[in-house]
Length: 407
Image (spheres, one colour):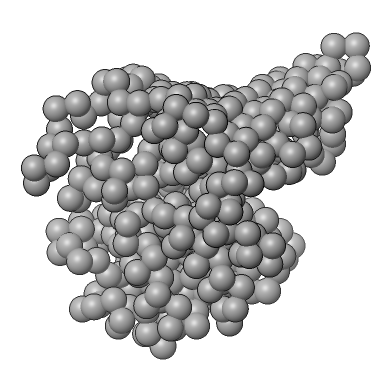
């Protein structure tokens, strides 16, 4: 049995009654030494998730961390000690974090409004870069990142990890690989969830710093819809607003202006029509994807019951009527992987990043795909603001995006 085929017996590796096994006798429990060193820039909630996922995966180690908040650094390091015995190097400034010759790759996990500026420093390193979603808070900055990525000596991966969630991996396989549904005609996605969590500086309560709810939170879903439609968006119409969340919230004299619900309709050039529904004043997490083709319907869903603290319950159902066998499949990754963050999607996102680092072909999100997701999200935000549908061709011309989209 080669190392690549050797199973990970995680429950035994960490079991108290198995810790007497000396290193010289470990085979199933022996792990390869990490072959890459990562630096995490930004050690808030998502930065700490990436640190935890890297340790769970074991292909790369966290070499160092940087954040402008000492409290965030302290919390990240304290948490890291719970699952790793590795030491962490703390950098005094962003340049030192990016330019450390001992580091193989950089993970940018800072607040949305800082992504573009932090990336400009990181690009000087020539190292592979992971840039969290959304890639920027403005289309101009996102387009500039695509241009820079096209000429960059290494690569930039965007953190649109929902494409690695178990139910969406299976849905893509059924709809696009097996073509179980025939020709896709309509796509409907929805997310119901609690409000945005607290952040350092509360930047996610303001459009100025987050890019707006549909950019900040929903770029994941627009990425998935774009991939399923296999076409370019033609027209976007949206309705939404701020109905419940943060109505009385102020920071430094500014009132929160973040939307907490919305409905988006997207027409694609190939005739596919899509909708997206968002509600952010729900007591639990629920996601749903419905795809209808000319031969069948697919339903992919995931629920997390926060009150009962249950693991995610995900499934995919394919309904074919007289066209074939209908079926429902319950899905999930191993518990250790799901619990490392975002229900296992971040784990496989790391796999893809490291595969790309090692020269393999992967299906992780590119800056161009990140830009297209932002185009839909930004057009939807504008439609909510002015109450009118957005013609995407005109929108692209207005924002001078045609050149970068045609490269």
